[in-house]
Amino acid sequence: MKERQIRLKTIKRIIKTNRVASQEELLGFLIAEGYSVTQATLSRDLKLLKVGKVSEGQTGYYYTLPGEEDRRESEKSYVQDFQRGYVSIEFSHNLGVVRTLTGHANSVALALDNLGMEEILGTIAGDDTVLIVLKERVSGSDIIEKLREKIPDLEE
Image 1 (cartoon, rainbow, N blue to C red):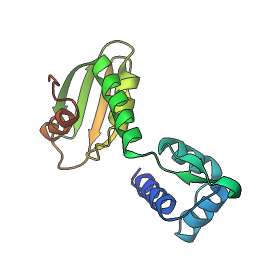
Image 2 (tube, rainbow, N blue to C red; image 1 turned 180 degrees about the vertical axis):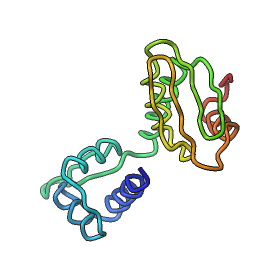
Image 3 (cartoon, rainbow, N blue to C red; image 1 turned 90 degrees about the vertical axis):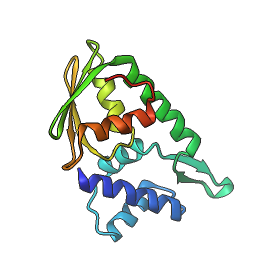
């Protein structure tokens, strides 16, 4: 997972600093930086990063990252998904369990995965619970604090 996060940051940097017109060209940049990535993996990465293409007029299109406004709208949507299904949260060491309404665990887990909380290694969703795996030395109160930054009226 760590390699993926580093690769995503590299893709962002490449797109910000170069006019990349195709996945093949982006693959070339990644290979030059030592990454071994398949076309399918790169496609998934671009989708996850919400990379779009912008017209450059007569010369074609190039990749672009979503703007700050798009990012805020996306985060707002994830917060709403979280709130829609959230019931409670408890922690034990580096694990947390989020109780959700029946059938909402997937959308709550997806929200947690996409809210930019680097303290969370990952989530596993059931039907009405989400298991959260925290990084070492991260406490449940750290996660609650981060969630409250995004959802001020969060109830434990």
